[in-house]
Amino acid sequence: MSQQRRQRGAGSERREATARTSKKASRPEANSYICLLSHNRNAIVKTIASKDPRAHTANIREGFQEMIQHLREDVKKVDDPKAQALFETAAEVVSGLNTAFQHYETKAEKAWQ
Image (spheres, rainbow, N blue to C red):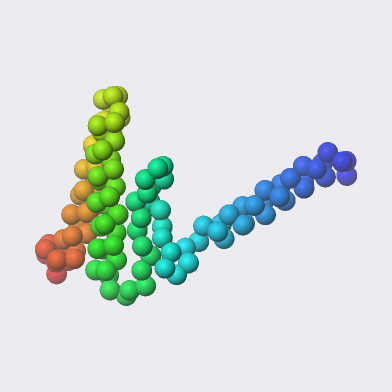
């Protein structure tokens, strides 16, 4: 095997090892957090051990509310009307999800009773 081929092979082995290490590092451990957004501000949703589905929906709703707030703040930060429409639309979609989760928690809809 040529030296160039061996070097390419070694590089791909290093990339695979790095990918394996990255995957291990990204797995949430007990009492860890999952990041929904990146940038300077993070919306954080706790990983919880509860078996109660309403505890999980309440936890996820907190993340939805933070995301909605972040999207609406971003509408004010950009000048591009299309980006503003995108952010506002996304906030409305996430708001709909938040409402659906709330209806599940309170059994407000017939489907959840």
